[in-house]
Image (cartoon, rainbow, N blue to C red; front, side):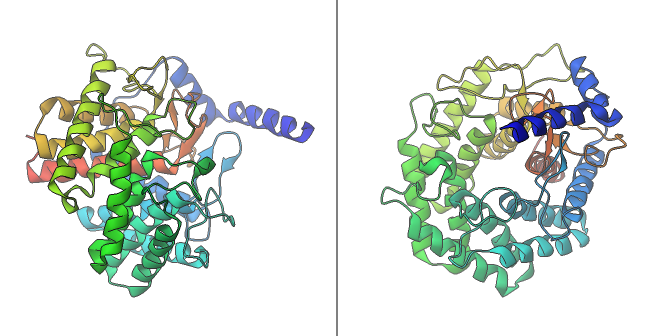
Length: 402
C-alpha cells in the first residue's frame, strides 16, 4: 500500500515537473487554443507521433500512450492491431510505402505474440490472458494486411484467431468468456465486424453466421431512443463516447453483408441514437474560435450527461460514424456535426511542443485532467483522429462532402 501511494505521489509530481507538461496544463486551464492548421498538417503530425510510438518500443508494436506521470508505456496488442489499418489507409491515400513496411512490422509482432489458442493477449504489454475484444481488433489489422500484401501468414493468423472467437462465443451470440469483467458488451459489434472481414476473404459461412449472431444480440439490447444496454466497460457507470462509438461503428461497417431487414434496423437505431445525441448535446455556435468540448465524456441511458470534459477519441470516433452515415442518408446536420468534432479535436493537438510524446498526439480527455484516462496521450485517440482526417480527405477528393 505504501509503495502504491509513493508511486502515485511521484507520478503526480512528474506531471508538473516538465515545462512541456505545464504548457498543456496551462493551456487547458485557461481554455486557450492555437489557430488550427491545415488538415494535412494535423494528419502528418498524428502519423509522425504514431511512428515515434512504434519506434520507442523496439518490438514492432505501438506504445499504448505517453503518460505525463510515467512517460512512454509498453506496446499494446489490441490497438496496434487496428493502427495497422490506419497505416495502410494512409499509405494508399498519400502514396507513402514506408507506412506499409511499418504496418507489416506491426502485423508480424502480433503473430509473434499470438497465443497458441489463436487468441490475442489482453491489455497493455505482453500478458498471458486472452481477450475477445482485443482479438477482434487485431483480426482487423491482419485482414487488412492480407488484402494489401497477399502474404498468407496474415490470413492464417486471422483465421486462427477467428476460430478461437467462434469457440468461445456464447449461444446467444454475445461473448462473456474472456470479456472485460466476464460480462457481454454491445461494443463487441467491432468483434463481429472482424469476423465478417474473415468471411469476406474466405467465403466461410461460419464466420458470417457468428458475426450475424452477435449483431442480432446487440440489436436486441437497443431501446426505443437508440440506446444500447451493455455499451460501457462496467454495468454501473455511464459509458464513454469511446465505447458508444465502437458499438455504432461495429454495426455500420458490415452493413452490406447483412440481410435487408437487419440493415434497416441498424440504420434506424443508429439514426435515432445520433439524433438524440445531437439533441441532448448541442454545439455552442458562438464558440467557433474557442476549444469546444463537443460531446461530454460519458452519456447515460437518456443520452444525458453532467460531464465537463470531452473524451477526445469518442469525439473523433463519432465523427467517423457520422461521416459514414452521411454517405447513406445525406443528412447535412450529421455532416456538420462530424466536421465540428474534427475541428474541435484539431484545436487540442499540439503541433509545436518540444516534447515528442506530446507533439502530434491526441489526449484521452480535454481538458487533459478529464475523466477519461487523464494526463495521457493515447495511441487510439491519435489513430482515430488520423482516421477521421483520412476519411474527410477521401470524401473531399470524391466530392461527396459538397
